[in-house]
Image (cartoon, rainbow, N blue to C red; front, side, top):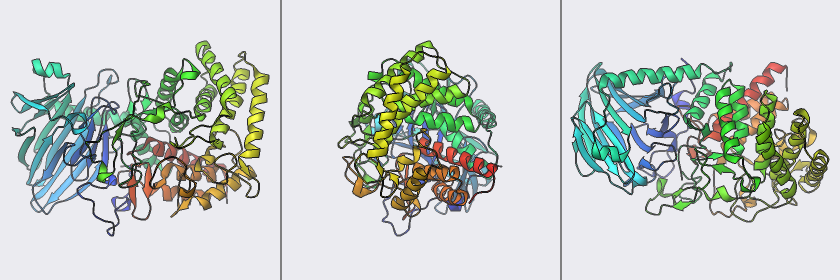
Length: 626
């Protein structure tokens, strides 16, 4: 079977670190999903985060953000001398956790049921199955459903043998088992034992609460649950077989692709930036954001990264989602959208929650959706250009939108904006933003020429030249020979590693090589990259943060394309070592204590992992390197 990483190589919490129980490290969690809903399962066998029927729905299990009131679904051996190990079943998002006690061994399978045609009619079925392996293992299942991020304790109504309905506000779940469930104080408990080949099944199905209040929907029996498990395993493996990547990183690449698929929203093709909200960028800090939305800039990464490893349908689905959501008026363009294209992503603070390891505030929604981030214009044009090169040119209606988009980039490029890092301090003249405005014009000219479209080419060329001159004059440090974060400043920014991908400068251009080296030196923290130095932080937020893992993968990709393969491999391996034992990556990382930070698992990290692996593969294939 394919392997991602050995279990002893994942991030572990430094034993010298202060214990912040009961919250497990982020690395202890595994993702399960069905391209609609998502849940995080701890190493101890507890679902501590689950959102149904969508990834961005209110949580029904949420003690990840408040241990006492958030709710959970734990399946725990009653023996005190228990050890465990886990894995995903090969090429699936089906999690298998083994529990070993002095009396025996059992395994727990966790999954969301998949089916053909599930894009429009998903099963919305969370399955947990406990199976005996040897001896006897005694378990306790504790189901504490808490709707609306823990604010609503449900009404539990007994509706059939071993079946309860949980109703709260506009949320409804059906909970079934083939063992007796005891209801007490808004909680369901089940004590049971398993011997070899014995199975105990638990089902949680999302249902319209009005139906649960007036009728008893059918709950699959254990035979049907077993059939759905096999159907789900087959579904994921058929999908994974589309992968077109061969080499030493094959298992890890397939795992990243599977994670991205699980984070996608099947009806629209959108990919959520992460499965969670408000996991902190530093423990106890306030840099806690909701990432359960879809960002425009991720579209360029996703289309290229997924298509380059064989998943062209998913790449096209994300491309079409972005075009549908963004098309209309360039003046109304947002930098992110809800998973069904929603524009209103109002940011709220849930002050009744203590936050992961007491990191407040807990936020839902994201106020950055209303920011001016000029790179969005270039990202969308680049998206269309890259898909055109794959044989899919914009139609008449979308070309009219692109015309307006490119004209807007030409008019607004000289404004200050919030940049790729969505700063909440004063807007600035970020070099990355200016370059992406140049990309909008440059690729717009190329698209119009190759597609024989009518456009103001002379004006676009003049403005592109003006932007280039401004960047090369005001965004370049001549003494050090490198690009800088913002006009008139000396600070560096890892987003500068993206300039060649935007077409502004060649990977092997002397200025880009020098910029790469300066970033490697100046933003290094224990072998990984910060986004920018704390002394240069003008983002309007207090507190520190960890290294931003995608930046290290960007560095590895750049080094590979510059022909510096040995160094690229070193950087890639260090970045890859930040995954947990299941091959999942967070947004950030604290190297000293080897702690994952930020929302999890992070789509941008997995996308950057794919792109860097492809760059390394291509560099090896092209011949000898330094």
